[in-house]
Length: 323
Image 1 (cartoon, rainbow, N blue to C red):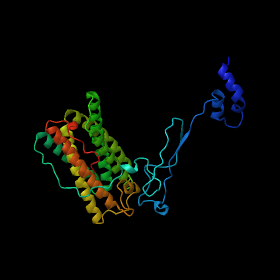
Image 2: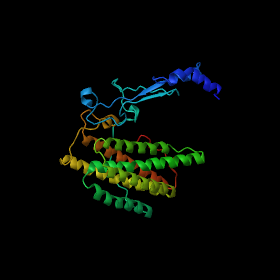
Image 3: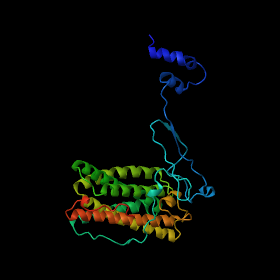
Image 4: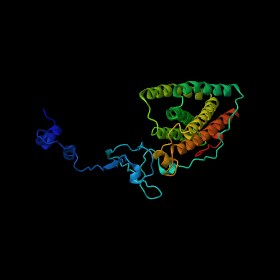
């Protein structure tokens, strides 16, 4: 027995269902609810430009990691896409970050600052990081592009884990975080942008991708437990990890200056993110990334010092936007 609605569908759409032409979903939809009209929006992502220099964009890089391909998304939820332009009026092409999230890196920061470990937790954190450097040196040797890429997949984890745990603590205690949730997530996002940049310089092999999955799985859970047990130890370890990152990028610069690594044009994503000049090179990118790592070093050692003094992070204003 055919239901009332089924009969209506057969009457309305029957001739088309059994014809050679395709059935339009809107045809059946309108027959059921003719009075309702869904508002539609279209989200279009720009095609990646093969030769950005000829198009007049800020370039030197390879592809557009934020907007690969052309996609069409139709929805009736009313979330309208934002049309964003640069200061010069040209269209902003990145969806993974916005113009107000870009900045010029502070290259004057002291790169030689070091926290001398004195307590047992500090020494444990210091030698944990030092022990991780040996297998990294053995595996990557002087392939600093791949090394940087691997380093950033690890360095982007602590900020996310710390921010998540501080966020949950804030919810449990019904209290403010002093801005530390945003500061730590900001650090994680910045480290992820490092990765997006170096993905344009060094393409990982299948075994390097497999290594990333394994290392991230182990490190995420280990750092998660470490932060729950002792936040001061966790932040101190990240501070030492950032010190090693500064050393790695300094060696990267030496290889570039010696001509052992080609100083290719900077990726377009790096030029826009750090507001670099249009003719920036890979060396300029490494310089600003190293400066970022120095700032992350300071923030994490500072966070550890707060805990060592018997205080909580919320009691000290977070260094939001500290680049």
